[in-house]
Length: 103
Image (cartoon, rainbow, N blue to C red):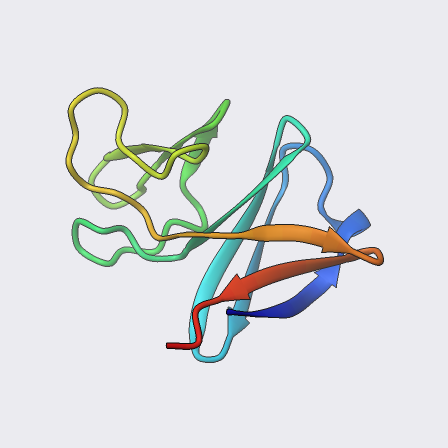
């Protein structure tokens, strides 16, 4: 894995999100109650963008079909089988860093 900087950490306040394009991939980083959560910007159901989905606590609703995903786990609440592609994110020297699989 390698890490890529996507901007200043202080640019993402609690409740906000940031869309970034990294190596041809669309990624969204959310600040959920002070915790950073990063996902690929693609619903596992049909590939719809999740960047503008409604966020209720840690649950993100896909704007295309209303599927809901918990950003803490990437999974649908309850018995849902679909799962988001979750990416490791952290702050290093004031920068938001996304970890990408290099395989």
